[in-house]
Length: 173
Ligand SMILES: [Zn+2]
Image (cartoon, rainbow, N blue to C red; front, side):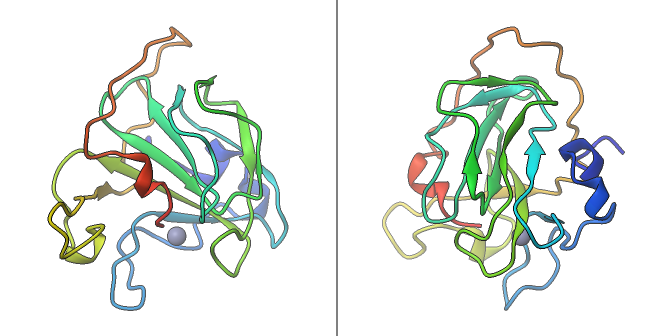
């Protein structure tokens, strides 16, 4: 498996198994990503991929958003962060410590990570602004099976972010 693991994120000392898995039941809406523990306190974590920080980190859910160099159009988001070591426009490598876990927008300190690909939502509750004239489709895939490999180096490649991936969606886990 080449997807995200606690070890890739530098969090393996807090447990090698995710504390929350993709699409598990969550109050009537399947979980949109994977949760990783940091032992109950904020801890630094790595990007696990090479890419570019495409939006200003922050928001209601303490989100870092990275466009992977190896897969144009996809975004990886790291949520609930208590600290940010990167800013918009930065290029990161898999080993870059991009921030610290936290509980911003949630109750328990952890890292929620999701992988957002272009396309339609698999579950109706994953749509943002449902009922509006322009609902935003969010097509999440399993971070544990999505290929994090394939990156070459910090080549400065700026992959396009599709119109559906707008900063207004930075917030929601
Ligand atoms: Zn989560």
